[in-house]
Image (cartoon, rainbow, N blue to C red; front, top):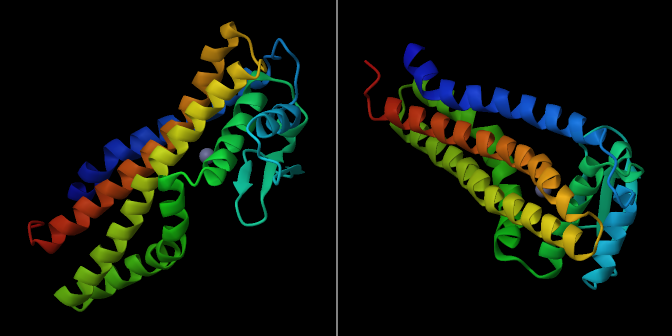
Length: 224
Ligand SMILES: [Zn+2]
């Protein structure tokens, strides 16, 4: 247990910090109205049109921080606090989701890979833990190895997600500035909203890696 904490604690602390950071940054810049006054929905459709993406609909969805791009139905769903708001946070999040739509249109490699990994990852993330437990209980090295391999697939998914998210945020900042949706002074504010969000993905990746290392270490028999 002490050994497990040693592995997982840094990642755990980072995820708690990231949660706090994303919430506080979002709340802060939700209060700051963007100088141009465009709503998240208008910013999103403007960037889509400017990039020749004409087959994506922008719509509102309930909940908070539920914003996402759905590549299957070609829909960009923005939470109500983003869709109708003209805050810095709203246009930042909206532009980030458009970043994913543009990645999709341009067949951006890491995004394609991420889509292909989704079914495998869904299976792997639900099956790996029970199989690992069973392996340790039955002292079956074969089962433990299968569990570790499945968990490696989960880690791989996180590692692919990271560049996809960072790239979408990078596109968001460029597009917001290029389309004149935010002023130069507002660019750093948008960046801080989007880097806080990136931090949560980084924390998730690190915690998956820490878990994998821990399982591997037990497997090697070093947990005496
Ligand atoms: Zn994203």
